[in-house]
Structure formats: structure tokens, C-alpha cells
Length: 136
Image (cartoon, rainbow, N blue to C red):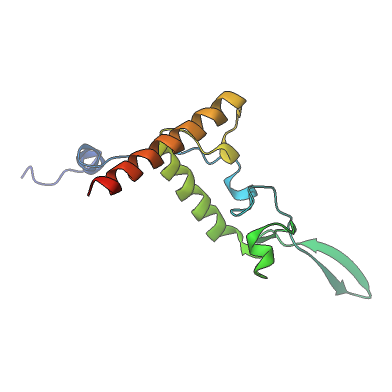
């Protein structure tokens, strides 16, 4: 009858017409502490079996050992890898949307110029928000 549309990607085309898409680079997002932006460690546990012991790394979580990190000071140095990864990807995408620049800890080709551009974009954003709040 002409109403059934099998075999085409009509639904994805329809959604693409009315949806904004932001593509983020997920470089290093799963390997970075969200509070200190350094590489965390995977916790290790000793398993005993058959009279021997083996050391096994836990890949489902990570441990921040930096004493200056906020999460270590609060006593919450152990993080789930999936929730930290999701937060890092959100922060990376937000920096691209708000500032137009990749967040420096997750930039695969980081240079001094890119860092300076990121700092300048943040300053301009904060100055704009400050002026906007003072005018009202």
C-alpha cells in the first residue's frame, strides 16, 4: 500500500534533520582522574587458590593515589570506571560546546598554543557571564 517503508534508513534520516549532534574525542577519558587530571592506578588484589597466590588487577575501577586530589582527601579515592568515563565524556563535550576548544587533559595533540587558546576561551566566557549578570 506504500505505507510500510522497509529497507531504507528513513527513520535515521528523519531524526538527523531535527537533531543537533556533537562529536567528542574520547582520547584518555577512561584513563584520567576527574579531580586531578592524572593517570590513576588499577587496584590490585591477591587471590589464593590451590595453595598458591596470584596477583590480579581489577579493571572495573581505578584508584587515585595523589594526596593533593580532592577525592583522596575526602576518602573516596576509589571510582567506578564506567561512571568516571561517562562524566569525562560529558565534560569533554561540554567544553567543546561552550568554549569551542577541547579540554586539555583529553587532547591527543596538546601544545602550549592549544592550552593558551583554552584558557582564553574560558576567560572570555566568564567575562561574558559576569557582564550579563551585572547588567540585570
